[in-house]
Length: 102
Image (spheres, one colour):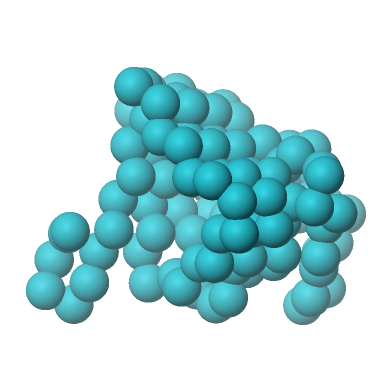
């Protein structure tokens, strides 16, 4: 399921929970914002210099969080991941705070 599908399908919905066995992949070369929903398996597989940023709010991942290619920027979000978090050699995971990147 791509980000564009989710945005088009749930436009105007404030709460969305996706089945824990469902994989949602953010792909492509452009910047993307990941909306604050509950995801099953969340995969970031973007271009090597592309960034996906977690939107402000509560983001939950019931399964695994995988960053295979590109960057996942946690920004100001407070994510909860129940399963394993994997960052492959082509992926980057950014954490930030009021005092700068961590």
